[in-house]
Amino acid sequence: MTETQREWRLYIVAAVAGVYVLAWSQITPTLRAKAPAAQPRAVWLDDLPREQRPAVLPPAGWRVADRSQVVAPVPRRVPAPSARIRTRSS
Amino acid sequence: MWTFRAMNTEITITAPALSEADERQLAADAAQLFAETERRFSRFREDSELSALNRASQPIVVSPELLELLLAARRHAADTAGLFDPAIGAALVTAGYDRSFSPGALDRDAPILNPPTAPSEDLAIDEHARRVTRPHGLQLDFGGFLKGRTVDRAAATARGAIVVDAGGDAMLRGSGVDGAGWLVDVEDPWDARATVATLRVRDRAVATSAPNRRRWRAGSEQAHHLIDPRTGTPSRSDLAQVTIVAPTAERADVMAKAVFLLGAADGARFVVGRDDLGAVLVTRTGDTRAVGDVELAHA
Image (spheres, each protein chain N blue to C red):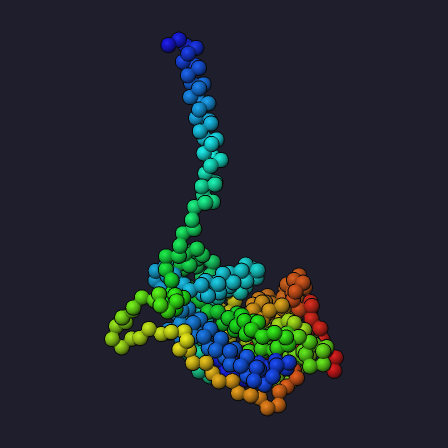
């Protein structure tokens, strides 16, 4: 192989490598954008629909609480409502 | 008007355009909302999700609601250059505020020593995985920020005019009884029966910060709940009280604390520099000054 042929071969290899890099730089963002979002790896029990909740067996003396079990205070009616409010530190 | 007690505060709900039955249902829904929020995010409840995070020695996955709270708190911290910071929980405990407040219950002979100052920005939050890593010693307390946020959520459940008032943190939607705006009396910090100013408020919220109620004795000094995150100790502000008017009760509460910590001069500049805020400042020498977007009612 002559000196000129060796140089040409180097040019061709460099050109092919350049095209390869350019092609990947165009394709990679598209691939990244299409990649599915990772799913959350954990979830709170009461975020799941009731029928999908796994059975949980707590230790003796413990129970699994549910948000719906929160006992809310019962509002009482104020007979003579004020037309103004009062702001203060509380 | 209906009232109930939650978050160690008397809550009142007024929706003048609703029938009595609808107003009662609105108040019942609000009571449920406040109870659930307190159950999940109070630092005083061993079984709350916030307490689980405050105890966690390893990364934990938090609920979407707690993640939302943490991110909102982070935004407020950035907006106030760290003057609002929920990471004051450990400083509150060190100062003696280690249980739900009642007058005299927190008095102690020990002074405040070695106050912690870890900022909440040290909390590592992986939003996508909802994973939160708590540095050792960092304790969160959502305090009035959570109360204000819950006031906003309760007010958002109703259409039309409504007032949700949680012990002075209030959202006032509509134009009040006479159409000129709801009347809001700003309490005198030295005399609970007196008023330093009366405001007209339409479709906005108010909140007040002062050390006059939640205070206790720590050694030879008086401690209070308005912790300065820069020092980890109760603020020595030259202000006695700050009332903020803002678009939401959450923002009003956060800004009331920040302005209180800044003091009278810097606090006034802070308010004037933000178009959506108004304030009534009461200094420790008894001067009262209204700044920013606030409307005083004339008797």
